Length: 303
Image 1 (cartoon, helix red, strand yellow):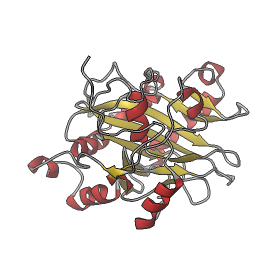
Image 2 (cartoon, helix red, strand yellow):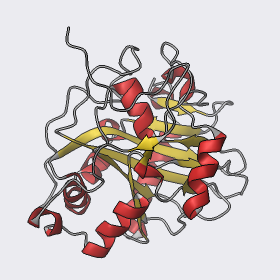
Image 3 (cartoon, helix red, strand yellow):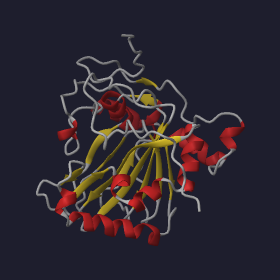
């Protein structure tokens, strides 16, 4: 068997210091870079910061039905008992639902919104497919947070994603404000790969979806990266859109406010970056966390 070259070693007892990413942030080149909905200033901002915030991208009326669907799911045991649904510790509130585009026709159509597809194709320089889709929900007073991490570090080690050629689109289903646990990002952190100490346990996803313990950067690395351009937490009304690069470090606090926070995530991966075997040496994660079969290019839902 041919030995694969791992350009991003991580998840070992001894790992290298953080080092620069090995590929571009904007994968379109030449005239193709300019042929898309994102203007030059937006592309430069995404390339510099690793994310792009668009307040009120969708009207609130366009996303409110999805929030109603989430509430309906929480009342149905045939949904809450699914393996791809993560409940809170008391099993009263939904924390995450994965593979939403497989459960809901409306969510599937949203993944193929031509405005989203045209932007991610422009950034990734290719056709795309859905690597993962999910809702993350934080109920008022009790919604837990998420530790600092790079999605790519997990997708590379546990899913076998070869390179940094994926983009997440996060759509706000509720207002995200300073008090209900908005997503925090470290601008520019996507330019460095941060290896994480510690081997990956078998079936790590069964616990990491509730409380992540491996794949976490050191506090020293977080402090160093945040010391350059600080931390940003975009806030705005339901319907706002956040595009962020797969290697951008992000986290969120517990929701201690009375206001719920729910965000929808679509992860678009380049068809030229399909998954191989996990680089951590573990068996692949389930289909609802990492798509391996349905990797045909998405066809948008233009009328």
